[in-house]
Length: 290
Image 1 (spheres, one colour):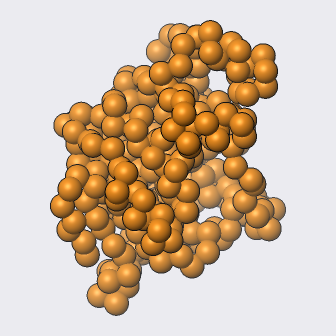
Image 2 (cartoon, one colour):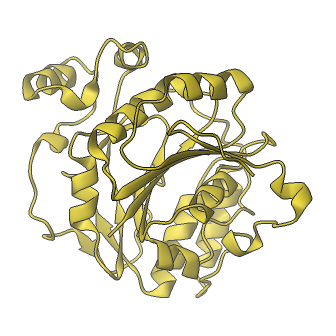
């Protein structure tokens, strides 16, 4: 099984580099990494190209112009370039734990998608991470015990092992805890529901909509707690003007059997004029682009 890791980013390359360093330490020739960029500024892209860690696997940067919060489209563009059998979506401020790749590989199961887990990190500790003063994935148990007691992190469950399948698979649709910042799905299943729905505008619930449509397809949710944790770096909350509207749309779709996104993978515009605005750059040394 080949896994494609698709990492969403926007104007936060210092955090993205911490994510990529962790992936680079774990990925081998059987993987690939795609940075799905929702329109970062030139200075942020330049920082990525200059400081990106060395990967043993193919690594590419897929950029499209900044036209607002269009995370669904950025992720779909990344997925459209993926060659893996299995896709793992990550946010560019969610640093994978040191066993992240192995855990997603172990938990991948036909007929299921994996809803990953996260550990929230404080602002102070986040500053140390993005400044390169500390590498979270390599921290020992005593560090995390101290971080939890001091309020620098919100949980310790990532330190504990859990049986591979016990209580993980949920046959029914559950809204709580759905996060596209850490989600694994078979590429064929993702294509069968037409990817993320780009008609969801602004922040909020396009990930719940994807999971709902996977559920309608017959794909079960499999929780990745105590295995797939990422360390979610602190940031100010994005504007949530559209959240209630997006939530209402998902609630309405729960009453239907809708499977396909209204605008998703199949609607990615292939016309020359649009393609020329998408830039694909290798992070392995050469620079092929559309």
